[in-house]
Length: 117
Image 1: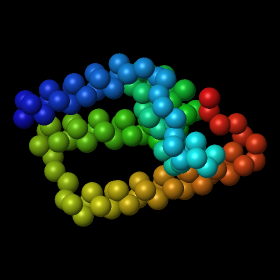
Image 2 (image 1 turned 180 degrees about the horizontal axis):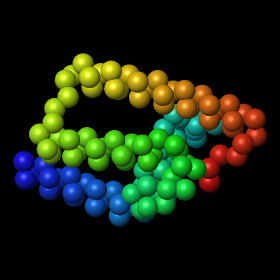
Image 3 (image 1 turned 45 degrees about the vertical axis):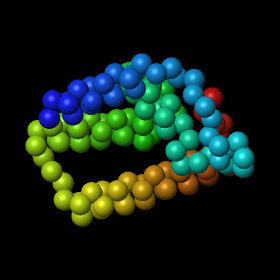
């Protein structure tokens, strides 16, 4: 249990200290079409650095992902458990939301909305 807490804190500290200049998306480099997770890593890092406006500009799921990861981590540390069926349902719902968000972003970009820098 102590090892899990240590690893959780270590992971959060490492994520918060990473630089913001990361590699670019291979799908976007090959096809010019951003993938569903384009800018998600940058959004998560901006959230961990406390820059919510920038995080939301890059990807709306970044702050949500950070919040869910923290909530799930606390839930687990406090002894909570989720049934595998519940996890599957949550994962399917998240995948559908992410796909819908990606389609919305693709439509916006096709209408001339600029890609995040």
